[in-house]
Length: 129
Image (cartoon, rainbow, N blue to C red; front, side, top):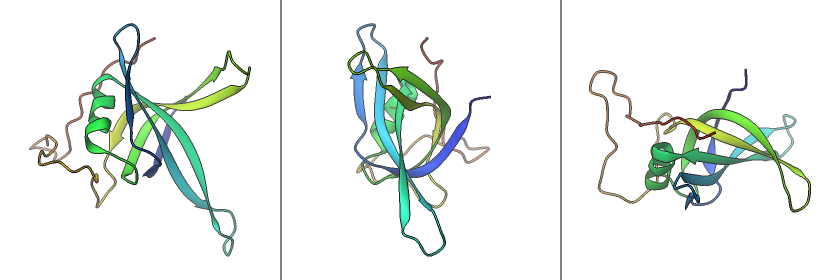
């Protein structure tokens, strides 16, 4: 099973791209802070993330640099044709606001909320092959 859940902060504003086949992709990075040793300074691990379709549009609308975010997805590798190096990215399957917080996006609109569960409604789609 290839499943990862990270909770951190966006390192840059999400960037929406439309691929040649019309599919929309949102790219962003998430920093997750950790301690190496008890008294040592904290270190940050950076995850490059790709979100597709409605999930990507949701992230583009509600998150920006510095926003807290919880992302669930799978790790994927790709080999660069330019330099031959292998790069890793998190292919986003689900996104949430962190507990006790929301996004920093300046907007009057509120996200849709399921009245029974109280959870935000995020329309996810199948990932392209």
